[in-house]
Length: 268
Image: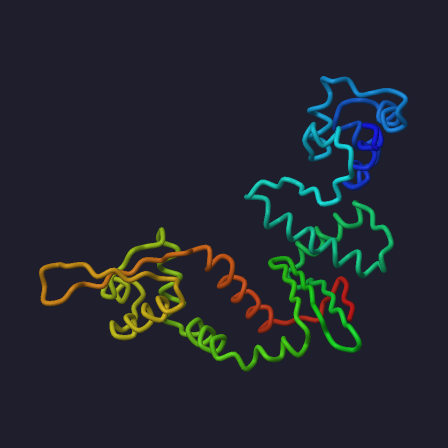
């Protein structure tokens, strides 16, 4: 059974905090934290909310009887991409250091150095019995992890759906239309409007818009205008697909086109 002092010590160590860092966050002395953890004294009840907040847990967690190794730290949605980036880079750094402890200062400086260098990158490729079974890559703009064996990864070259997607996104008309719609408040357009704004032939514009619709990025709504046939109106849908797939894919293509062997750390 854990005492509250033992629980504080465990949570602090899980957060990789020193007693002094925890003390400064709560507003007490390091000696007070030491006494709590050694069960010499108990934290005042009025300090419990601040203590729990400093350790990213609830007050109830401080009094739990069993350990909580699967506790999840709360991260604001707006900060989640940056947090994921840092955690993935931290994993690479720890892998490069053969499991040795890495100081927060070292990790912080490494991350900042990587972020400030447009050509800097870091990566790990893991192998099992001589065959790749995963890869992690980080540069200033993107962080990726591929968990596939080499056999599964190579099979991607045979996937025709991938070829279709790349073919659509390589179309200059498609890219110009996406840029226009995304930079104009996810503009709702007709083919004629888009053709004029993007200076693309009308027939080519209709083809490009329908290609985007085939990827589920653009919706098509038929509007009755009293003419002989309805007018097709196009609107971007599921913009999260663009944020989570299209932008990263384009960034990876840019990296490949401008590839520089400038590594902060790399291991196979």
